[in-house]
Image (cartoon, rainbow, N blue to C red; front, side, top):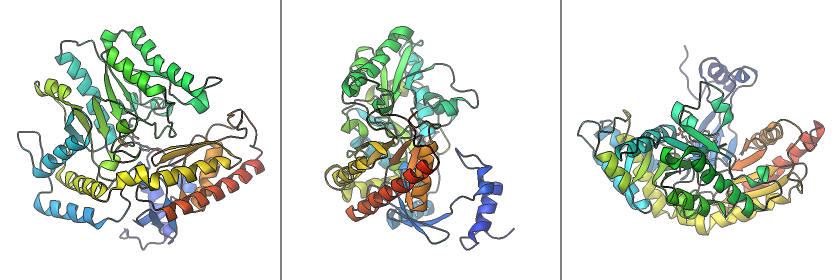
Length: 464
Ligand code: PXG
């Protein structure tokens, strides 16, 4: 067995990868035909691959590398912590300094009465915690029937059994016996795809009121919580019409159900505030966090919980936790990441400076003949691809066929811009500069041009 280093030829690395590494959310057999691109290093917003190509990462890894790649301070924080205390648990009346400091810092940053943190190593784990926590909360309050959690189709809350059930991805539900009982879904506020003849405002109200209708149908006495991302990320960066959230918040408050804001993508500056809930004026009882919490440098997630929930849960023994809940190295790295976000005013820059610059440039992509809508908030945006803008028509091909063709062109042009069905999405590192934004937009336009030519050549420029 050779030692696996970056110095092996790319083809050998790809062959070993295809033979032994099972990729998430992929068709493994594809890697036999074409090897995965091997990423070897990164700095700022740029990735480098095993062939020496420089790629602009407009997805911040997987929506997470908010402070950009290559920050030595985080490496130092990890090394210091590993030397001092690489691991200790927080289960049996013990604690440690990094978890104390991070909990207190998050309580400071989080809005309102969200002052208590239950840690996990990922967003999926944190949402599993939330599911058990809200059900336990109501049981402890003497309302054991309040068990159902309402979510939305096309939401993404993770891919474990619990969080995959909470999410509304049909592809996830189709495998492994999901969703588990006690989870219900309502429609998403995606006006572009589903708004029909309604104005965005009327459509937003209609979708919010589906929550009320679902509560009426199932009985308020049976509903524990509503869970939602402030802006749907993996679903295609779906920004709800302005009318949507105020109505949802009214319903949650009037009907005495908890609201879980899944901030895994929206948190830590992505929308121009520390949390998406602040940008959209939401008042969650629990926020799910992960990704940008450590800028992806360490796997860490968690649930930031209100005083009220923490008091009720704290009065019973909550039989829940992970070996790595509050892992000291992950906490130390997250703290250093939060220090950098704060001291370098990265969140403010997204709100006031480079964010508005990116928004203006990104919206100009709507002038491309293949783009029907360019929507963006903070530094997360998406382009709806269409052969007929005025009709908001999908392509006649299976959803995602055209998006994939454009994504291939982006990849070839050294730009990581993903597709979700036929929406192209971006979520760059928050430290992206104006000059790098110009390069991003230039490569995106070129990739759209080439992609559009491919679509026409393939005879797919047809409305469905
Ligand atoms: N909630 C939200 C809102 C997410 O976006 C999770 C929970 C789950 O987090 P973990 O850490 O368990 O992955 C996520 C994750 C994609 C993609 O293709 C998005 C995510 C994960 C993987 C792929 O856009 N989001």
